[in-house]
Length: 256
Image 1 (cartoon, rainbow, N blue to C red):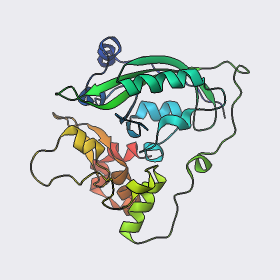
Image 2: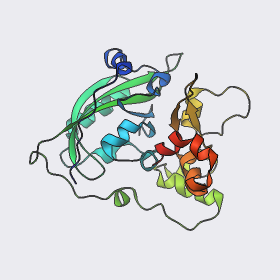
Image 3: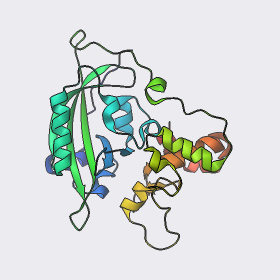
């Protein structure tokens, strides 16, 4: 299946990030026409956020890739030296830029010009990475496509369990968490505090609560929803959300 990977030109709000780089988690989560992915700040650099432009470029849904590394974009013609360069720079907390062959959901290769920015908190501590991608089509015949199916790549997540704890642990395992982290209370991110202040990092890294983030000012546009929120929508059913579905339409759209 042939798809175009020509990324749209960045809007004016994106030009600053192209020149200055993305430096903080708040900047990385801003609404943008750039293809953006945010990962944890340490190996294996699991994905905690993708935006709509990233999904359009790669063909993958956020719910499919949440808590996984970006390795599913690699294939037989992905340059190992460039992958190692990205890994080494990330281990050192450095910015890096490469142009690498990646593969989309359907196995179609494309050139991925990616710049990876370390994100630090106010104390200067590295917390996450933000990758800004620019896709380019590869001429026919230069790099052959590969035959793969996402359901085989990630495995089936279907099941008949009705136990919420079992369902949650199964979802965590299917999302790519190590076995030790899938069990309740073992390596899991704590639930959000009720009342009181919650930091942006705590909200983004939370894997138990259903989380929706918005801009801090009107019109409070939605900037991020997490996998548990999407899973809850899937269980309830969009049609049963009624008025809430219309109100949170943008958030529902991020899950599909």
